[in-house]
Each structure stands twice: as C-alpha cells, then as structure tokens.
Image (tube, rainbow over the protein chains, first blue to last red):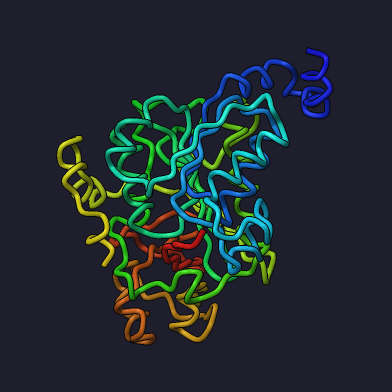
Length: 271
Length: 77
C-alpha cells in the first residue's frame, strides 16, 4: 500500500483527482491496438499512471525504421515481437499493471471476442482497414474509442462512440469515425508513414494526448474530446478543434449486425 | 466579403498551399464545386469540411467572414 501511495503520490495529490480517480484507474481495463509510434507512448503513460489491466495488440516485429519514434524499443530488440518487448517494459516500469498480449493482426473475430471485456479501446494502428474495422466493432459493441492518427507533421485525436459527460444519448447519438469519414480512402489516395514520412516526435505528441484522453475518460476528470476532432500541426504549433455531427451516410455504410460485420472485407474496402 | 479556406494534411500537397481567400460562394455545396474547379487534384481526394469549427452539411449557407477547413483522413501511427 505504501508503494502504491508513493508511486502515484504526484497525481493523487492533484485537486480533483485524488484516491478516487486512482482507484478508477486501478480497476480499468484498456486495450491498445498497435504498439508502434502511437502505441509506445500510450502504453508507457497508461502503465505509469496505473491503469490496472492493459491489453496490447500488434503482430509486428521491431525493425530499424521503427526506432526514430517507437521509444519502447532499442537496437537489441530488432526482430523481436513488439508486444513481447512492450509487456516486458511495462512490467519493469510498473509491476502493479497486468498485461494481456495479442500477437495476431487484429481482426473481426478478435474484436467480437475481446472488446466486451475492456472498458476503453485505443486505436493506435497505422492503416485504414484496421481503423474502420475497430471503429465499426466499437459501434456494434458500444465501446468508447480513443482515436489517434498521424500524417507527416500533423496528427488527429478524437474520442468516438462516447457522449460528453452530462449529455444523454436521448439527445442524439455519439459520433464515430464514419460520421467524419464515411468511406475509407483507397490505398493509393493517402500516403502512409512509410511512403510520406513522419516526424519521429509527432506520434509521441499524439500518443500522449490519446493517453490523456484515456485517463480523463476513466477518472472522470476534465473534458474529453468526445464528439470532437483535434488536429495538431507540429510545424506551426497550430491546434484546431472541430465539433463533429452525425452523418446520415455513415449508418448506411456501416455493418449493423455482428454477422454483416464478420462478413465485411476490410482489406478490400481500402484497396 | 471574403471567406478563408484552410487545407489540412496531405491536401496541401494536392493544392500547393495551406490557405487562401475567396469570395463567398453561397452554400457548402457551391463551395465544393468551386474549390475542385480551382484545385482539380482535389477531385479524387477524400475530405470533410468544417465551417467555423463545426462539420458542415452540403446545404448549409456560408456566413460572411467564415473560416472553412478541409480535413482529410490520416492513417499513420
């Protein structure tokens, strides 16, 4: 208990946070999909903050081109599975945190099986097919989704499928990623990080902001980005926040049953 | 009266600029048509339009001195 108090003393001391918020973090279960540029800082800060149970999903191994931004990994980790290294580092950082690792590429079946046991899902992936799949699963299974994505020098953060505190669902449904972008772009429409490049610190900034949203959602402290999209430009220091609204087109394009979700080919959707 | 247009993400690669001013075209639908005429590369790009910091519908009338933002989806992580 003494270690617990000492470890979290700086945040327990915070006015409006206290032991009550810390207890909520301890009891929370968060799934982070993607242990790359966004996932590394998200995992580090959630573990440091004391989120009780963290799921880590990634099927990739560490390569040299990851090291400019994926700060959980070092040269000695090249070729090893990211989830294995991430779990080791989390335990070294905070052995009060329980981890579950998923070494497969995230798919529909994993979503249906595992989303129900988590409180919050975090999208830290690097491709549109995963992003649409995760979004649709969160809508079907009614899970809050903390979204983050980067492009060159800019990043986006949002909280989907969650009403702002104090707002009731009877006053309108929460928005999701498809309300913002109903259809995925084709693979040649948007350059990914490998093609377009990304400033190494940028996913750090965006990932830390996603972790902040997760901590606020769990603890109930502050206002989240529910129903809003925040865009950050690292070159200009410009933060731009937009209020999101429901999009009629989104509903018609989204699978509305588990069966139709399972049958959707997300790879093809984005190619 | 002019309105201000801002491009985000990789849309700036397609337009070659991050912002410009134009005469108020009327509605969001009118604006979409004009902006694609001016920047044909945008015709095959996916983006959402925000009007004064709120996502805009096609039939919305653009007020004077409005700020429009064209935001594409980002995939990287």
